[in-house]
Amino acid sequence: MTASEPTPPMPPMSKADYVYSVLLDEIRGGRIPGGTALRAGAVARRLGVSVTPVREALRRLEKDRLISYEAHHGATVIDLGDDALAEYYGLRAVVEGLGARLAAARITADDLAGLRDLHREMAADAEQGRHDRLAEQSSRFHLRVVDIGGPAFLGAHARSVRNGVPVPAEASLWLDPEQVARQLQAHERLLAALEAGDADAAERVMIDHIRQAGEYRKHH
Picture 1 (cartoon, one colour):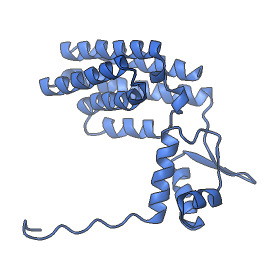
Picture 2 (picture 1 turned 120 degrees about the horizontal axis):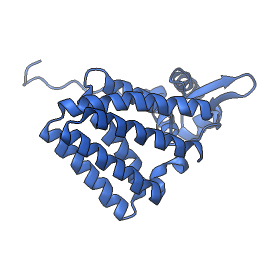
Picture 3 (picture 1 turned 30 degrees about the vertical axis):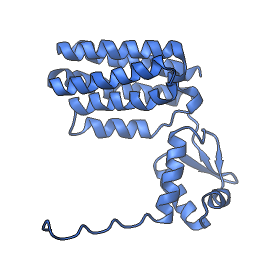
């Protein structure tokens, strides 16, 4: 395609894609909590579509392992028990811990400056009581570290792990002021380890940081 040729228009989102994107966002954001039954008819009425695209979207969510089907109950958002949560946070600790270890050897001055900017933004929001923004910012912080350490595979894998397990809004440790201070301190220790190029310390801080988050989630 030459510079003079017009860019082809983006294909419109199908109704099934629309329903899928809405439900995916609501489940991942915790606005539809685990254990909630998803009735195709009710979803169709709420979103102004027919039942057919809703059923297609639900099948896709089942493949994503975000909902399950049971006889006589239909689709239900998966609610993780303690064992599954332990596995989830353990897997995150391994993947993101490895990302931090590799990042310590690869991080550039620009990478470090970007992470520090994001950390300062989080600290400012915490000081102003804007805790509702911190969970998303923390996710960006962690994934940016992993992207630096493992741009070929780890970044995509870390996102896949995170996206498979939504955190209910009320269970977010970023709404707890005491936890906010503790988590930001962990980010500061991680930044120091990355700046020093200390791979062992970076991995250890990340693993401990994620495991502590898992313990909090287990009890909330």
